Image (cartoon, rainbow, N blue to C red; front, side, top):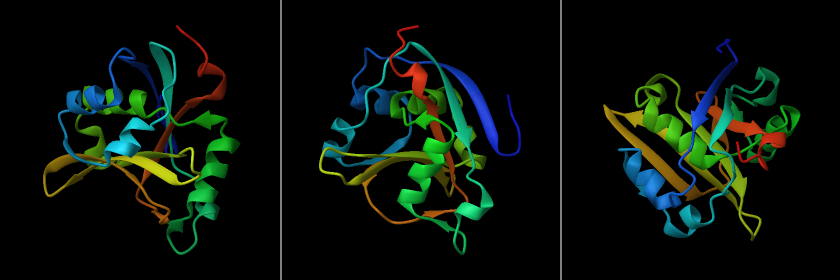
Length: 154
């Protein structure tokens, strides 16, 4: 399903793989921080509904979106980040991030903002996993799964 502000995909997720194995399987150039990769949220469900969304224009200030505001956008949509599902979807659709750079964010156990981001720069497809509290530019799409599906094993 696709609209101007939302794209929904059913994604088959390889939950038996480690985060590192999922990133390797993406086929993208990686720029990652090992400790952040290790702390990525690990959800459940072999098939999930992954929702890519663009926040409302009113959420941005001069084209930028603070991390806390993005967290509120997730809550408003009742979505939670699922980096592994997003990684598997970007692996299945490698050209998607060329036109729709996409990311998700979460907080680690020390309350620091972390993220995974899929992008293309000068023809090279990459994935970044890091810790950062910088604001997000308006070009990004964000991904999450419905909260109620996080505990599902289907």
